[in-house]
Length: 79
Image (cartoon, rainbow, N blue to C red; front, side):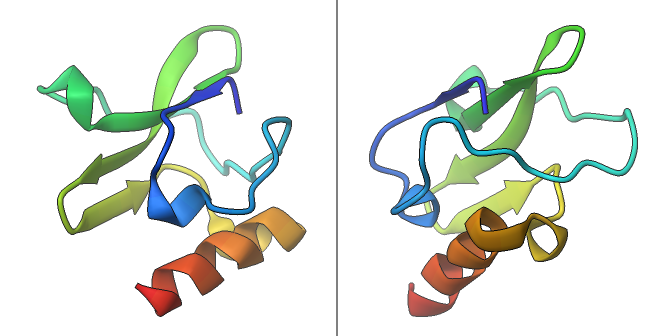
């Protein structure tokens, strides 16, 4: 994680230095920069997750991201 916007309910309990599992090198470029709530750096900075009202999407695989990924899934289930 490079930078996360505060107050996203999916990111509750996730440390600032968390690592997430990415399978490929593709990434989304949101039309609205405000929708990007999490950025990562892997050779370049990119949007790794978007959040807009009740829509959440991650570029990484939370189910393969160990403890921090399971916390994201738990947070999602509790919404």
